[in-house]
Image (cartoon, rainbow, N blue to C red; front, side, top):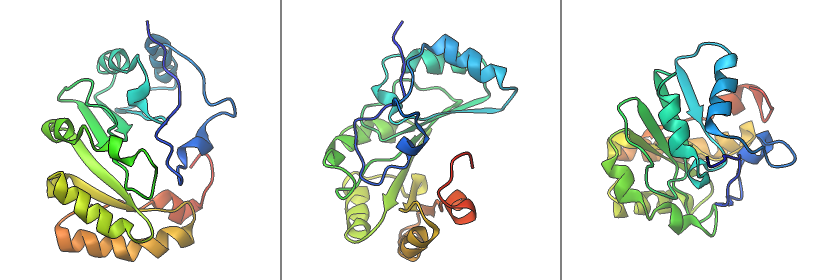
Length: 196
């Protein structure tokens, strides 16, 4: 059975996910063991599969199929670097394709956009920081014909000051285009701390 590991090769410059990883980059595991570990934590209506980049893990489809046996809703956070591995009415995808300022691999995160648009339970979240991120977001959303009702923008930042610096631009774009805003409330409330 393929193993899973917390990792990502997309390489976003501002990534805060690595902050949560163990110093060795994560641990290998198999879906059945990780599901048992999650179930031991107690009942929950939602399981979120995140990474790094879950689509780079060979055992993801098995993990998702098994997870749907135990949770009412399963969500996967991904850059969209590959097409959806599975479609199911209780399986949701939070797809975060990258802007050019984020990583030199940004174009790869847009290649599967048609498959993600065809997945009814996929929403799109773009992280917007300094200019030209605002113009790039508008251009790429239009070029790939992302449905406005499924688009969210999030201000980039791991500090309250940085998030606030980008929030007004993000809010204006959302108002102008009918998109939603996803503020980083945990950063505004608690700052860049683990466990919140």
